[in-house]
Length: 493
Image (cartoon, rainbow, N blue to C red; front, side, top):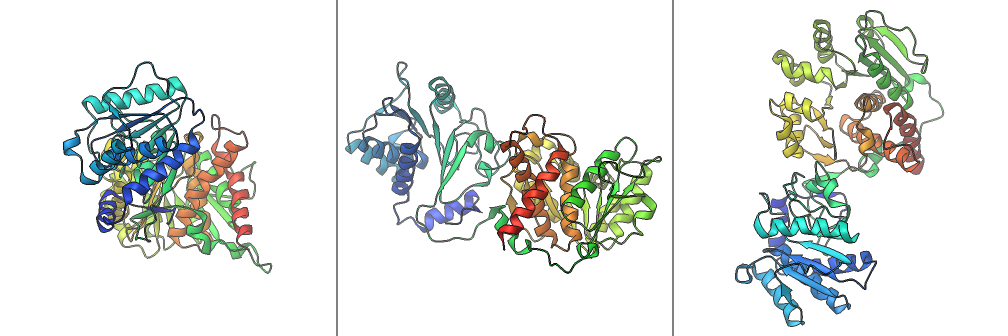
């Protein structure tokens, strides 16, 4: 089993059909029962199992049967029609009944639960739950809170779209999710992390398969994590340019420059649009501050355009010049907003020899695709892939479960990061991390993957050390990213 693999529903259906001769439902039930046994902290209280009308209900019946065999008191509520169950689920229900299990139609009012298992809907739900199932979802959430017990979702929390991460109402808020065969993108992005809790993958002993996408891990870009030779100088590690910093937004460009410097770029030049720019950054005097017209004359290996850029006529002119520059290019913030509104500039991306990287948040992505933020968030993977295709660029769609998509159609979801990152300047720091790796001659796809993963992992390390999530600042992430990046390189020796 590849723990970093992600599958969409059509691929999962094909795999299930391909291995229909194997006892996949029994294996899923066993994995669920094993996980439930680990989570049960009070075996004196009964387990409530909610079994739905499809194969997810069959998984629930298998888990319930095995838990009864292990001397758990189990109460099953079946929210389906026994005559309309799929064959495998019907067989699982019969095995449960033959072993002495019984089902009820309602949740007993007087019971206090030691665990609740959600087996109502799996990966196939495409509309909001209704009627009795909706009532059971609401009750499960309420009772799990009342009884302070684990709420374990089977495969996918009921009410959550397993492909997109969009949560219908109502939707299970699980403390834990055990997902079968492979992880699904919807568990990791958009609303998924708020509804899945801790995720465990049960591979069901299937052979390897070709994934649709993946999750980012240091192994994804490990080939680029190389220790530095002794016989080097600052020119060995490239020059990065940061273009932005209009009036009242100089700090954005400085944050990007500081991040680029502390991720190892040999020289960092910051071109500022402010008509009265500072000549030195007192917190990072190593940065070389320039007027924007002189930035393109510097010895650069990569360029970032956007942090604090603004949308003035001068900003449009400079973006056009940046797009024509034969260097790896990162576009962020107002560079993306200008690109979305000035149709002349889009063609410049197709004609570039060097790669481009776009780093939009959902609202910027909506402008670039002439869509709405709601539509972008409804299918984040699809939106990122469409951005990469339309703009011939590598893309990270930022947000909960950032999605990276490359020009050749590959995609990943990042699992690092936390709510403390929802603060001003975080995107500027990410831009600095990306351009730093590009300046050091990393391939553009690897640079983007590493920067996105490092950005979130550094914020996670700070929270683990008691710094945030409330009040975490973008500047604090920079030093944590430097420390973690060096640790990754040391681990490769």
